[in-house]
Length: 254
Image 1 (cartoon, rainbow, N blue to C red):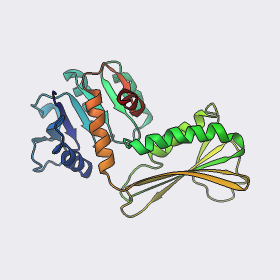
Image 2: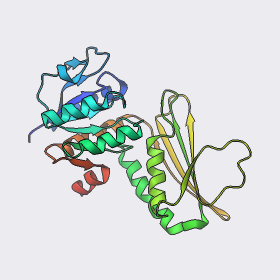
Image 3: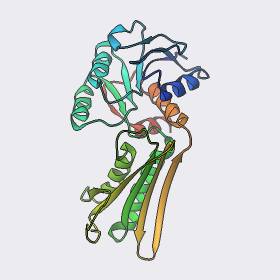
Image 4: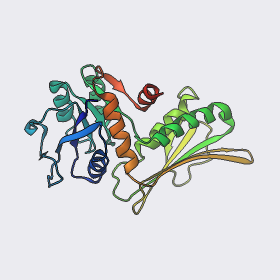
């Protein structure tokens, strides 16, 4: 079986290290090189920018940041590579750029690469459809103290899944402070907690009269996200241009 050749962007960071660790035991995929603003010895060539890359590859796994997104997308387009966007914190302009490039690049983008979180997403949508307007929905996400964006992309993804059950009529309220008045049924509350080394925890609470249903997911290691990125890279190899997400990968595997 032909190996999926990967360029790892953000190769020298923590997530890059997790990806490399898993790839060392994977016969179906290999990292041919890395790109990182702060290169160091990690066992593969590492370049400070994509124009410096010399190796041939099939897919980019991007665990860097939303900065310099256009450079990555342009490199993928020019060289016929797929790209797995595993970072978060994209602006509205970034998302528009991703949609634009999807006409000529195979782009895999999801707010969370964990299989468990994507199952949770489906469960939350089903719960919202069954429980309806009589249950208030509140989302709490917890992450480490170095995470820059809030609320998390995963929390917003979960909120969107719930909102689909209400024809996207709910509005998001990010935290509450002061005399905000009684909670309105049109709200989905989203709350961000930051502290310590929490990898990632998400809780969706459906609060009704005299009963509460809570769906939770807790990531105990960043390896779950690295494993998801590698699965996505293998899936993306040879795919035509377009937008892909975890449900496409899961459908292909089942």
